[in-house]
Image 1: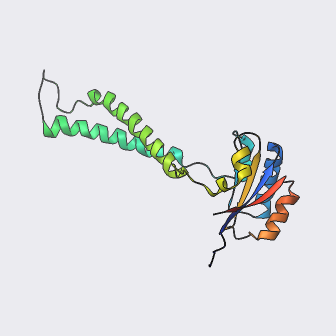
Image 2 (image 1 turned 30 degrees about the vertical axis):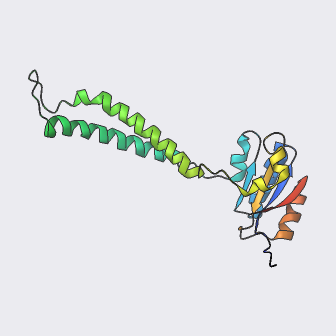
Image 3 (image 1 turned 90 degrees about the vertical axis):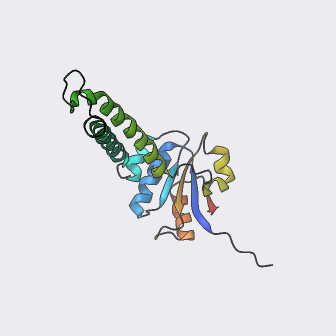
Length: 181
């Protein structure tokens, strides 16, 4: 029977403190690794700086949705009152734009919020019910309670199983394990 060897996804290093994780993350970036991620049981603000993350594109999703909602709401009302059903009630002009402001504002907020939600889902690839890191029993047991992890993916151009494993040990990792895809 021909069994295929499981494909390696990453090396996962376990650290005891967030300070150790932050220092290790900074060293991983300095060493030139590009495809890695960190896992902590709670938000660690300094990790964003240590990982040198790019600014989030979320504001552009919200802004685009808000502009689309505002412009769409305004022109929807203008079309309905000027072109589709022009009614002269009480001598007011057909294009009475101050009356459009409440609906325009509401659609700006509503479509901007929906764009933010769907943009977040798209950026984070949510829902993602499976991730290879859950193949690690240690991560499943300690990942959301008391340990900090750094994973370097096998697709990284600088990744070499032995050298990367030794590098993670030098950074002070308590445990380095191979994660299968």
